[in-house]
Length: 129
Image: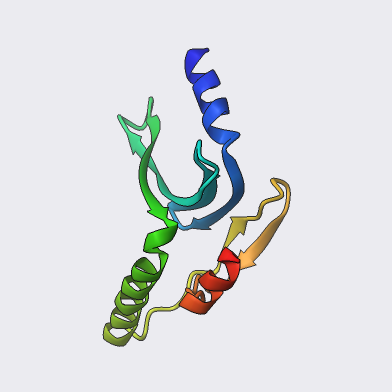
């Protein structure tokens, strides 16, 4: 019960959330507010892990988090864009996934035909205003 209360406290600080299903992983992009009222981004990768034998499998979720603060947006996006461009140049033949991802409405799904990083520094600056 105590863990449930902690999770509720943590979740009420979320002011925007987007989840993206990509194969065996789900990526969560949450905008949170700290105690000072400042916004930051929490990126979470959740991956289903099945262990044990086929008769009694154990299902767990591995989660990895990154916290991204507003003063680091420009540097982070620059590095991410450079890494994405490098991968695309080295492996241009990789087809985008055609799976589905959840939108903010729990009952609604929409096709995720291309998980592309279209954000640029100007978009982030506009969102900050």
